[in-house]
Amino acid sequence: MGRGRPIGSVIRNNIAEILFVMGKGYGYDIYKAYRVVFPPCTLRSIYYHLNKGVQTGEFAVESVKKEEGEYSWGSVVEKTYYKLGSAARVQGDSKVREHFERKGEGRGVRSIMEPNNL
Image (cartoon, rainbow, N blue to C red; front, side):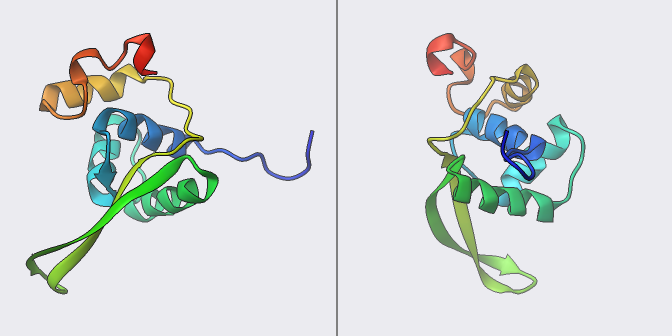
């Protein structure tokens, strides 16, 4: 066994479960779903684990989009959209699937738990 802290995180695993159902998403959207389905954590922690997950290959940046609107800090926001990376290990958590079924969102909600999708 190697020395030091093992790589991995419960929060990153939960984010991977959310992205598996969402397909792609930006930080705040992932955070909102996380707070409903899993024990609360901070938005800062979600962004930390998204960035760490990109480094470990669990997540990948799909795109970065600038959107205009009326925000307290100005008229433009930059949203980084994430998707699952090649190193992601997803179990197919039924709590996440049920949350998105209730909302009517997510990719492939109809058959997300089929073995060929895992």
